[in-house]
Image 1: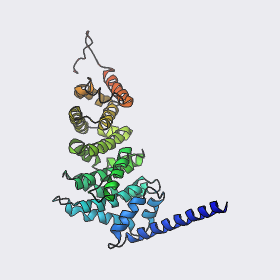
Image 2: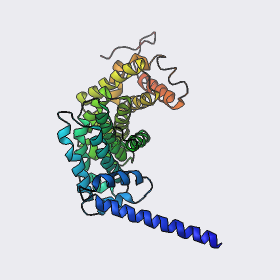
Image 3: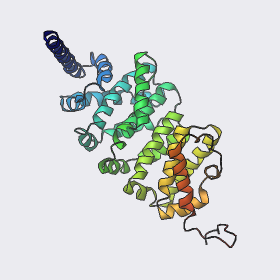
Image 4: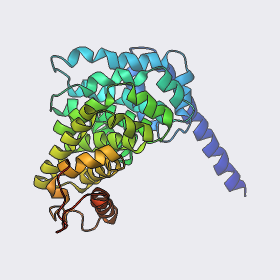
Length: 327
């Protein structure tokens, strides 16, 4: 019993020492001389300290220091001169912001301060070098907070540990919450065209997270209505999704295809969009192009079957059962 009590005491003491280190590193964020190491250490601890987000948000000068890290690399965006070291460092700052964005006690304040807007310049970048690619992924991760985004974050931190170029997931921390507040905020910003740009020309990981964000926006009734409100919005989304399907038929990715199909299925819930999709749904989603890719994915196969069914319902056909063109 004494041994057990001593063990508990030691664990408690160790936890207290770790917490003191957390406080120390948070304080060190305020000083440019000690900030880089503090960013690195805190980013490693963000999963193991449940209340790190409130600690960061409510400590004096901390969020300003994190935003300063972001703003400091703006000059390296255009012309694109971002180095691996710069990417590593800002990725650590973004990881802490993702922590704040995903925590229920700090999310609303994070949105009210419009902090995600500081990340949008990173989503505008087009350079395909690894530092820029990871920077876009990290920024997307804060907005998305998807399982994919979380995986990307882990990958990024592994790169940080090995001192390779990094910058991974920020879009994830918001839309994973399914909160109306988050969707309303995103619809007032340029996140949809930014996601569509990345869906068209980004890497597979970037496309996957960006498509996940679009999917989460579409799954919200307000988001679906917004995208289907005008022909221009709908046609832009449909055009990019169509291009992705064509590309996926050449370079299959079950993970990315899953999100693309879900986006199409949700669009088919809107009557006007459903009518348009009858004319523009890619043939590759109607035939057996993806049969091999989806052979073990019962969920996506079910979504695809439902999509086809939705588009067939209410369709006018001739005596032979062949769909008639709309008048």
